[in-house]
Length: 477
Image (cartoon, rainbow, N blue to C red; front, side, top):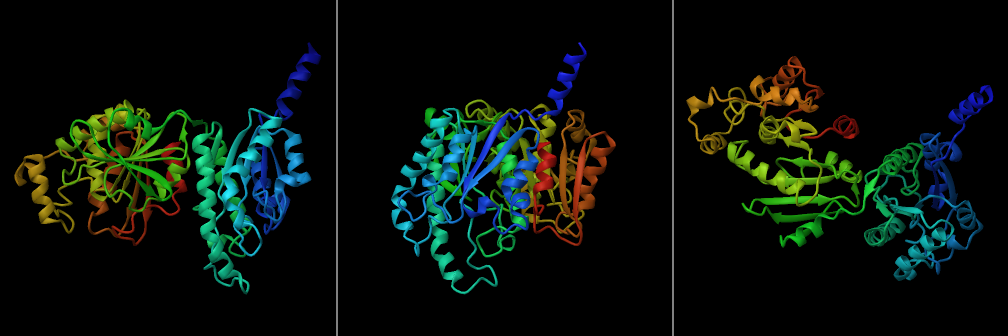
């Protein structure tokens, strides 16, 4: 019995790798330009982050390419053979930087990108048929970074557009193949986090590692396809580009409301989503971070309704459609900037069991303040439209329940829905004392979980929390 107890204790402390993650790439994947390649390069940082759960090894060689007819194909090296021999469960492939070069005899072969990418997958899956592949990037280039070496700027200007072609090839394969995914890291790396407009510095490697750690920790649902669901019911949709993601515009069956859904590259398991009330596309930092992580972004137009019953009825219909026909999660995150604060809180009060979290950004939480102007600048035209939408008079508006009131907030607090607020302390359009701060005080008093980010000295604009990471973590936690 003592021996069995000792063996059990050993099993608890010895690492039992759930997954072997092979990072396959060029100089960036060797940790080049980090202070310490092994420790600070993104594969090393990723290994530390996954310690005790997954084993991470880099199989990378400086200057090498995906293209087999280029000057330095990685698939012809002993490094790539070592990756095959290791039989990884997951391959993170970050190649393309050297393929984009026109000075080297590489880009002229770019028509072979898809064939050669599939060849690499096939070689790796020959050793492990259950391999999952994550194509990453390629990392962006920054021709306008100050103090570039002589001749670097025109070279990067020529190559940067080629990276978009490579990215689209990776996406196309990910769309077509099971257990193949693509992740855009354009927003993960910035010019000041590179040493030469291409290679990440130590902090740049850290940023990539954090992003990949989040991505690789997500379980994806490859069976989910919004476009196919719309097509199945005969809903005509137009496809547009939203920061590299596919935006589907359509009319809500039954009432014709203008709707938009932006689909992630791959849907996260559970099919989570964020539902924006107004000003679609404005300051989309949070939306993009969630799209990166498999969330959908949704919009159903309730403009000029100011949270009136007609707006809430329309949202009821959209929620039924989104969760039923489109298969999205039953509880979205609600997002409201400015006047978008009215519908998100009023709809949540009506439907507390259908909300995961609420984010208000300089939100209108009392229409007597905006557009009524008591207090605040107000907007006479919007005030007249609001009274018409609600079917009330100015006198009746004075006593109308508002999101700042307990009667509205109590159902939300009872459901323990987290509320995040981002407030400019100098906002004179939607004064926080009568809106966000008043709501936060009431919500906290009745036991609701609330987090407030205050932006000292800032007004109604700019919206958003920058960077949005802490906000994202609060809303998704």
